[in-house]
Image 1 (cartoon, rainbow, N blue to C red):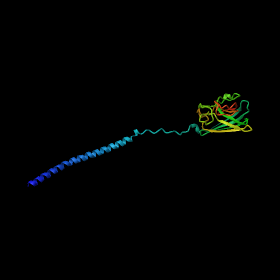
Image 2 (image 1 turned 60 degrees about the vertical axis):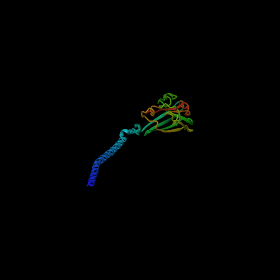
Image 3 (image 1 turned 180 degrees about the vertical axis):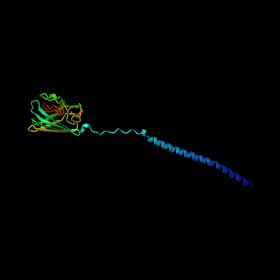
Image 4 (image 1 turned 135 degrees about the horizontal axis):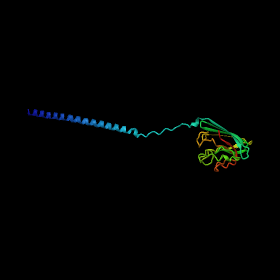
Length: 223
């Protein structure tokens, strides 16, 4: 009887302890779940902060490929070249602008056989007998004189040299987007300038005009 009662008492104590452990275990599980959830929330928060738009630099402004308004214009200027310095050199020049590109075609006569220089000068003034009323080379960008396209610099008026045949005839064609006709850009606009033909050859080195000699023909680029 005593043994049975002792077993019963022991069993009762074990049951009480088991009952006591159950809420403790449940509490531990609850705390563990909350900790896991908190960690998940913290991780999610970190992801959100990392992807916050405030941390992303703004995109660069878009570059504009819009062409200048004058690209839409088709223009043409025709001029006559008058003899200067008692040379007898005459001719005609046509400038045509299309889609921002200017084409110059010059046809000359009365030249001596061989090479001669042709330039654009500052002013459409051919009133003087020697053509010097047209001023110096057209050089709106302040570059040294040189051959067109030279990396060390060249004038916007440095067209270059051409060759006259044995009959004194010559033709010159130049195509460029560095000129315009009446676009208003001082670095490109050829209106109000002059075409000058020289007796000599441009050496592309001598400053400020290439030592091309006297001016034998002149024509103003005017509309």
